[in-house]
Image (cartoon, rainbow, N blue to C red; front, side):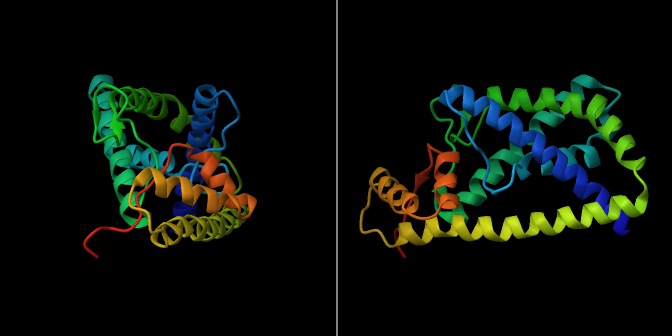
Length: 219
C-alpha cells in the first residue's frame, strides 16, 4: 500500500517537473528571457502531474486506438486546465493566465492550441514515456525507493505549505485595496508584493500577466 502510493507520487513528481520544464521553455521563448514558471517554489507544475496520473488511471483502455486516446487526452487535460484556472481564481481572487487573445478559447481559461498540445503529449506519455519510466522505477530496490520517495514527499509538502502562504498574500493584499478596477488593483498588488522577499517577487515574475480581482462585490 505504502509502496504503491509512493510509486504514483514519484510519477506525479516527475511529470510535474517535466511540465515545469515545458512551461519554462515556452514562456522563456515568448518573453525572450528566462521564466521560472509555476505556483510552487520548486521546479514543478502539479497540473501536469495530476493530468498524467489521470491519463494513466483512466485512459489505459484506449491505448489500442490512438485517435480515441488523443481525443480523450485532449479533453481530460483541457478540463483539468479549466478547473485549475477556475478554482485558483475563486480561492485567491486572481486570474493566473488568460487566453482571451487567442482563437478558439473558452472563457480565456483554455484554448485549442494548448489542448491539441496536451493531446499529443498524452500519446507520448501512454505509448513511450510511462511504460519506460514505470519499468525504470520498479527496478530500484524497494527500501531505497521508499526512503527517497518519503524524503521527496516531505520536501514537496513543505513547498506546498510555504507557496500557498505566499499566494494567499495576493488575496489579502488585494482585499486591502480601495481601488475598483482590476488593472489598478493588479498594478498596486504587484508593487506591494515585489517589495517583499524574493519568493514573493518570483511569483509575480512567474505569472507576469496575472490579473488580481480584488474584493467580490456584494460582500
